[in-house]
Amino acid sequence: MINIKSYVCKRGYKMTMKKISKNIYEVQKIGKMLVPGRIFASEKIISAIKQDKTLEQVQNVAQLPGILKYSIALADAHQGYGFSIGGVAAFDMDKGIISPGGVGYDINCSVRLLKTNLTKRDILTKQKQVIEGLYGKIPSGVGRGSKFNITREKLNQVLEKGAQYMVGQGYGVKEDYLHMEEEGCMKSADASKVSERAIKRGIGQLGTLGAGNHFLEVQVVDEIFDEKIAKVLGLKKDQVTIMVHCGSRGLGHQVASDYIKKMEEKYGIKNLPDRELINAPIKSQLGKDYFGAMSAAANFAFANKQLITHWIREEMKTLFPKIKIDVVYDICHNIAKFEEHLVDGKKKKVCVHRKGATRSFGPGRIEIPLAYRKIGQPVIIPGTMGTSSYILVGMKKAEELTFGSTVHGAGRVKSRSKALQSIRGEEVKKTLSKKGIEVKSGSWKSLAEESPEVYKDIDEVVKVVDELGISKKVVRLKPLTVIKG
Amino acid sequence: MKNAQQYKYLEHTADIKFQAFGKTIEEAFKNSALAMFNSMHDGKIKENKDFKIKVQGKDNEALLYNFLEELLFLFDSKHFFLNKVKNIKIKNNKLTAEITGDNAENYEIHIDIKAITYHEMFVKKQGNKWVVQVVLDV
Image 1 (cartoon, rainbow over the protein chains, first blue to last red):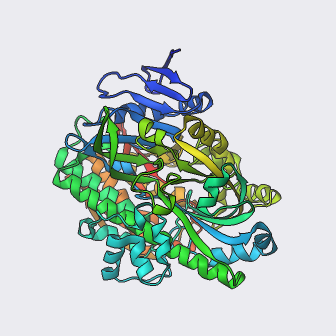
Image 2 (cartoon, rainbow over the protein chains, first blue to last red):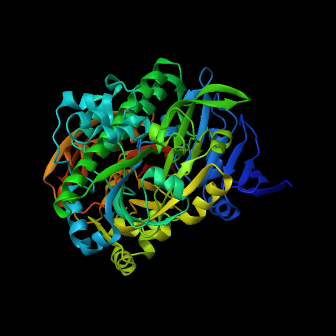
Image 3 (spheres, rainbow over the protein chains, first blue to last red):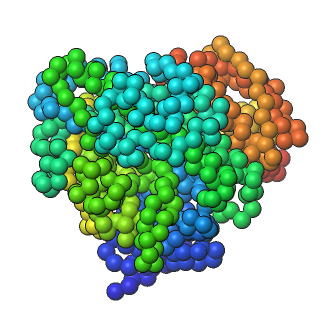
């Protein structure tokens, strides 16, 4: 049954959307759109998505040259700038474009999951020391520098080799990067394409969490949905895990700004549905330069989390001398990648933009670390401070429906200003404390702005991708202590 | 006009969106800088640091983008937190200004502004006043 619904969108024109099947909706191709839009969400989420300009942004992306199949928004989608957050689009390598606005300013904003040999009880006996220790050790917040000093020359190595360079310097072990997307290093990186300005913004920020939605969380495995896969990931009930969410800091932000300006200079802004969608042909010099710089910024993000991981290990060792901490996986949220996908029945290399979206490759793909290749790529979906996070694995179906992509989090529903009007940080801390979750942040306002109620229901978001079969639920994690930037 | 509204924040699901106003384009730009820093911290800021800045852009939007980005660059690279914009001049797509402020480490900053965006940005003259609109990526 096809259920067609029309409604007047925020821009005042009629938009038609039809239901293709459960959790799949199509935004009709109109005007300058080259392909239709596809929204992967439940009815409940669709009505939340309609409240802002997400669908108009899906339509804008559908106008970009060389776009293949659909302009996609996933179940956690919300309005962004240019592309929506939770947006995915793939482009033809010859006719298509690459767009800094399709990657986002926080290049390789990403999540790393660490597993420990501790149980919930170990943490509960020292909950206060754990939160104070980690808060003191790992620089968070903004406007503050890192305690880690690095020379300009060594920073180039970071940009070219990412987490692998940090491991080489003694900040981790080889096993760490073997369990990361891209093995913690995008080989396409070209440090010479990163501006001096970007270097100056980022050089003092290596090993910092930042602020906003970035966090460091100590969690416990609360429920297991698939024992077999959980075992391969090395996760069992009551086990303590640590999750780190951060990105490429000012360096990545500046890379995006720099290339937006360069592309404007070269290609002009006429014919763009949104100035933020400026782009360059993938194979043009500028397209190649951006990809090299973006990859370098991605490596900065991998290295950033590697240094933070090292400090977590150091700090936790002082509290639990027999602790062992291993990397489960590390996934990218904001990135463009050249990957092989099936288009019109043929295998084809395409440029996939994921903005606030996670790769979700099914079993067998060569990009997946050997240890996980049989189960599919691990997918880490952080929840909010007060709600669960989920570990899933990628499924083959994702390659068919979403260019091998899935959601990246709960997705906001309430603006920061609305949150500040009705929520106080002190109350958030108190409420969470009653639930057994200790929270620490340099700012009360930051706690209010990131309060659990400003996000969509993570359980609903995860249910949708699990039902669609683009990723499969494996484990649920509950927060014990949360450090917000 | 005394006590005229300098800026107002608008609804945006995830990011910060504001409009800033002025009798002149210079005043609207100055107020947009204040709006940006006020979203990070809304208390009183001391005057301990100052810089002279110079930016250019091929249209008013590009000039605004580059002006705010320069301030963000100083925030990240020099921990500069803005208090005042003085002697701001815009001519032939070039902007010069003197800015004063303090070390950001002295304040509680609750938001990480990652970038200025061109999304829904405009610089317009409406009647006898200038209005600029900006969405910041946070």
